[in-house]
Length: 410
Image (tube, rainbow, N blue to C red; front, side):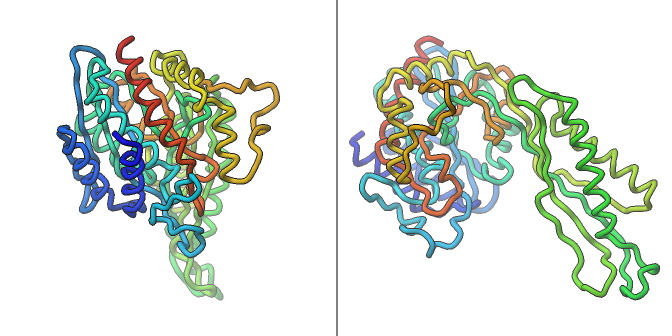
């Protein structure tokens, strides 16, 4: 594939607005590109305008390596605040601008290019399965649906192209979202004894739940992922200043570890709510709204080791080159960004943020995992998201080498 075509694919994807929705248009675009190269694909519909894509190529016997990236992006916010319109797909002075340039249409496009070129060259063994997902940013909709429907069955190893270029992620915390609803009864504020204040009961619950989860979290630690942490992030309640409120609610997020995971946190929330409903005469209920379990795989897996060998053996994928390129884009010297004493080489890492691996790994708990892709994490979800063009192009080549090496050794 010519260099200009590789660039065109990414820019076309960036020009399709997929702000937490409308991924079907990107899925159809990818399907058409694959068809041009004789590769069949399947669109898996989740809702009107929302679809994931699955395609697979094989070359003899061997393991199944899955390649995955998500097609949705977060809101661009005020487009007038951007130097370049967020969905224009502009390139200026060797920099690609646009929502999704870093998180993560560049990674998905690079996987797509590598997938096509490996099919045409035949330089791999076994099977390669491409899975482009919808709805990763809010609830991992696509990966959950694909896993439940059996599309992740048979996967031995998974490479996710999230913007993670200065390390190879092999584990991450889980992510739990839940809501607590407080119901009371309204009354005039001059006669509060006639009502039941939902806001006051909610405040009692907020403090009690936070304390209980914190106490449990301090007693549980994972050697790799650390401790679970918990934050109340949204509070709503009341509509009239001189009325006793009859409804209030909060939403919270926990980042979890296997020893104190999502369901254990919810059990603690339910325990506290049950006690308050009985002892304080509250009317509280809890609802889980997102459930992405923690992921913990091996840092010495064949997939991780293969990526490290390629990354540390290729100058334009090395730490110095990446820091220099990203620093130039943001006008900052990143050469001192690493903590003192840390070797300037790509190494296995862990993170608190979740990925689609939380869903896919349910199909095979022994699945090898590597999260590794082009991007500028410091610009993810921010105005003027952008990426050095050469980083994207370098990853299209790197993925081919990684997949070739992994499949031949696997």
